[in-house]
Structures are given as structure tokens and as C-alpha cells.
Length: 329
Image 1 (spheres, rainbow, N blue to C red):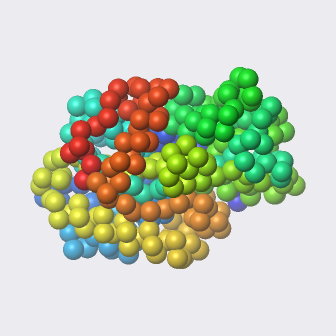
Image 2 (image 1 turned 30 degrees about the horizontal axis):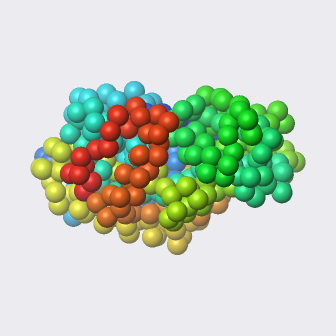
Image 3 (image 1 turned 45 degrees about the vertical axis):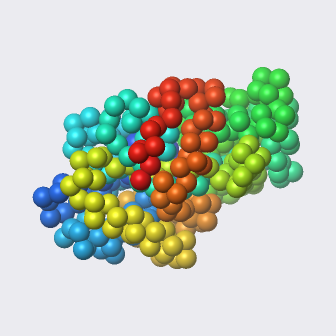
């Protein structure tokens, strides 16, 4: 059952990820026999649950403990104190922290975007179909808002003139507006989008997954339908002390990602207790999470393009400049 408490917990976890970049921290110590692995209730945590459950890092550590965290203050304190050495993060936040002087690097990207427009209107298939409409949006002037706005701009639509945004604080609030009928469309991340569609069905409401903003990103860049939304960030202390762990972890991300995509039901069963959503919802969400495991150095140009586009409207989101070349591992 999807309760308000579980959904709000999930939404708060995503809020931590998108507003300050706090996702999937892994606490590690070169001398420690175990790793404590943490993550928010979003798609990449399904992969991390598998990595921990199946012992994919047994060559480097005797034990991996995984649990979901909810407070963004924990991430902030962990990195400032130096206790956290390896963490998942929205990609732009890694750039921001690096530009603020923290010795961090971007290891990889774990999702190619998981933002969707949900709608009651089954005829909405493209950004152009939202002309004249009001859309629910969370996190004003943050990454989800900037991505959506840039997609709409590329399709010739200007906020305030061609469409209206109804801003709220969290994805949960956006969904509540949709379920109450106060708005017909809203932007949501995964797995909140899938959870919302399931909740709507139980209430007798037909909610459509109308637009995949990752696919629409191709119209912005002229490239592939994807954007480098989130991945793993590494502290230089751990990178220098245990380079083999970092390489092994990335290989585990590759293996875990492929297994989760091929076995969503089994993966959901492993992750459900941590993510606090029903396993069937998580399983349905997996295909829409665009999971991947790409080395940052191999997609440096794509990351820099993403950072530059976000910074067009809000330069401070990446700390005012692009990271140096050695930021990308």
C-alpha cells in the first residue's frame, strides 16, 4: 500500500537529492573492514541495494551495510567533516561542491534522467500540447525546473506567455495538486511518477505518463534523448588511498545496473524494504529510470553541455563556472 507517509518520505528523499545534491552517500574508510552505504529512495538505490545484497564489493571490504537516508543535513555535514568519501549526487551538485573548494571528483553517471510530465489529458504527447496550460512544478529555479523550462523554450514556448507554472515545495505536493484536480498536469521524478499513477488508479483517476523529459532533451542539444542527471562523487582522500576500491565500485555499478534492468521484479524485492515503497511500484518504475553506469571522463563533453545549459538561467547552480578537467574520472 502506498501511504501518504511513505510517499512523502520518498519525495523528501528526492528533495534532498535535487535541492542540495544529497543522494546515495557511501561512508568509507581505508582501514575499515566494512562500508556503510546510504541512499535516498530513488532509482539508483535499487542498484546500490543489489550491490550490497549480493556482495559485489567483497574483494575490497568484508561487509557493505545499506540503508536509506532522508536528511540533506546529513550529506552536508558528512562531506564538510570529511567522513563521507563516496556519494551519489545530482551531477550539477558535484560540480557545485568542487567549485566551492571541496576535493571531490565525478566518477560516473547512474541515470540518464528520470523526470516526467504526468497528465489527465491523454492527448498530451509533446511540449507543444501544453500550450495554454498550467503545470505543477517543484523546486523553483532548480534542476527539474531548469530542464523543463529549457525543453519548453526549445519548442517555442515561454513561461508566463504560453504556459503557467504552479510552484510547490516537493514532488508530493505537486502530485497532491494533480490528484485533487486542481491542476491537470505536473512534473514528477521517478519513482514518484509511477507511485502517483498507481495511486491515481486506486482513486479511479486515469493519469498518463505523457512526456519523458529525457527524450525531449534531444531537441535542446541536437544529440541523444538523455541528460546526465545523477551519479557517483568521490572524495580525493578515498581516491588516493584506495583507487582499487573506486575501480571496483564502478564495475559493480555496471554489473548491478545491467542486472536490475534485466530483473526489475527481483531487484524491487531486494530494494523495497530500504526504499519504503511497494515492490510492484519499484519494479514498474525501473524501466522509466534510465539507469546506466557511464564513466564521467567518457561523457565529459555531455556533462559540460548539461552544466552550461543549466547555468544559462542560474549560474550559481554549478558554482559559477565549469569544473576543471581533472574533475571527471
